[in-house]
Image 1 (cartoon, rainbow, N blue to C red):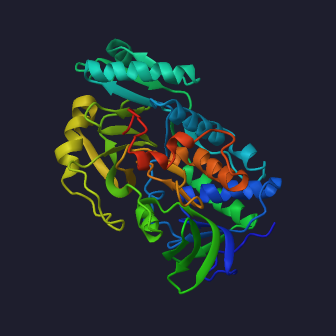
Image 2 (image 1 turned 135 degrees about the horizontal axis):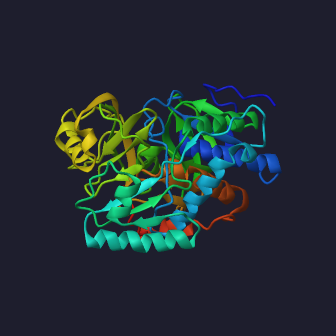
Length: 407
């Protein structure tokens, strides 16, 4: 099958579906729509508009590629369990093409640490939900944690929540590359351009205008613009409570070997750290944590020594002697209502579909969200997993989708 080239000018004056943003979420929707084309469930035209085909400043490029099932809400657990199955069986999902490799997965697991009884009870409640849905999460006492991972200081820990099954991180770059490649092989067009305005007639989106001057008609618009999602919604006169928030990641060496892999550990302070190859990766949320410009990727030069390093050295004394190898800033698309994705149609403009506001767990949710969006376009409803509780209606009503396991 011919691979569609990335184009600089639209080939048509109208498309059935226009996806604004071609990073992980836009390409997930594009790939799942192309799979509907393959099975004959959808025969429409699809255009992905991406301003930067290098994706250098995208949230996808800055991702830590994490995967976990340790959520408190049943729907989020199910979304992540599908992601784990999708990653584990990537070759099968993509048609057993002999060129497609298996995705490398590191099942080092997650370790949530509770420093007070309130959060300990939250972890216990969450574990019961996760276990009921098939996740391998276990609650560990400080003694059990210390026996399994002798390098931790657990003197101030009540308990931990740990899972080594389908939790850790994976090769999301290969998944992303093949989603784009296969979607283009199946006829999806990728356009290097920028949407600068959205045409709307009452309760319908009718077109998008490009920076290059063209106006393109569309039957359905999918907002997959990541940190710029609210700007796209504004173009259509719609409110979206999503804003870019800066996050910092550091890769460091340690003078003293731990002797074993380090699970992705979430300290009670909120600092997280894990094994990354032969080194370690850590990160944190700024405090304060304001909205920033989508192009602002400037590092905070003081936050590591002032906030991160003291926590690392307390929790894992071997980390008293470490050296940063590299560091970068990326963006969370932060949903200010409840830190969870807004997915599905607008309540009044039904051909405007959201896939926005993942607040840091979008990469691991991308398979389920892309599948759900494709189902909406092709069938007018969710079929594999009901994502309606994550819909735009809660923005209108101001009723949050509660999830206690947010990093």
